[in-house]
Length: 510
Image (cartoon, rainbow, N blue to C red):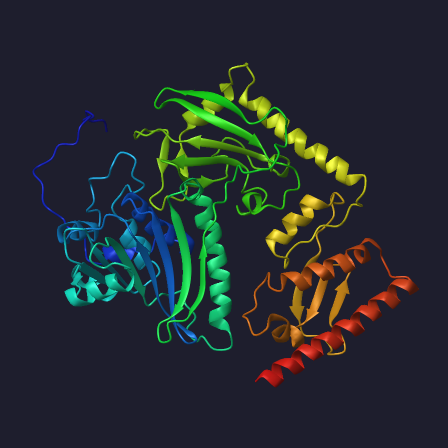
């Protein structure tokens, strides 16, 4: 049966369908990582013209209670705060603003906290505040008005001169990530791990701002009862293109890609120094993740690495990084994700890269070949002094596997060595199985080795790395000779003794 096709869908009127209150629940379930969520709040501070931003972890003894982000930006009036706290409510972004969709503050905060309070003041208005409590938000978009006296008290807490201070304080309570029980050093370990990752993330994604003399981010930890400040340090910029010496004497070079939908886009192509241990190089994921395109929007890094379907990542291109400043106007070629944690590109971008060239006629494809060559040459030089090894596999931390792959040539077509915990006789610290290429660690000693921390597949990276260094050559043979057997027994004895000493220490501490 055939009918005439209608190129436009006919309608018979319209009706208003406001979102269900549960939309707030969906908004808070977008997979924001902790560092990404905090960075989204700092973006708002930058848009407000802040010069100083403080990320403040508050603890009560061993228990973490709140997280605050404080800035000295222009602040908000009562009406402006209502708009900022309305989902999708902000539509007056400046041309160079980092904000886009009007959802970041709410979705980033409620992804990690059961409530978010925002208190703000301008030079001409009193402190005002609003609070989204998740259980009230999902029940009907009910946003609480903060008691004015508390709003002023919270502002005064962070103001050296309350009369003229302006800015904004964002407070998270009921943070899901915080340890439920802070005893046994859990809170200290959490803070050390979290603050390190947060500092690296902010240092990387906001490195252009942090490199300016008039902008600072500080991370601090304070006990709310005693006022003791446990930590107070400034975040340092981590420039992903901050190598001391270029890996290739003719780079960086600037290529031009012509796009019908977005005009000409500049590609700043770099080759990193081989075998670098700098945080600027290693702060971005794995070897395959840190290569590729680094997209910036208004000086804010929004994607660190990846080839956006232009080609597959591979180890030989691990030194290749390309800086791209996105066009200022919206277009169909580059689409930024809501979390500002990636860029989607159209096929037109990939096609334009095929013919992109610099002023001397060198093509972007030539650049990839030359970056590949620098990596291969470095590996060849390393291969003259270091013997090939069987690579580590499951159970070893990914960063350890990547470093070994960078530093040592691997024996081709060999099954990797895995490592795992399992119950063994307590006279053994480890066992090896050449047939399935596995190192087994004695489960009995796991708690002592981890110092009470929860274990996981890739736990105890230092211990496992040392055992890999000791044992990798054992797997290259079908059996052990008398000298190797004696070495294995020696290592067993020493490690069992050390593990038992650790167990005794745990008992004494308890």
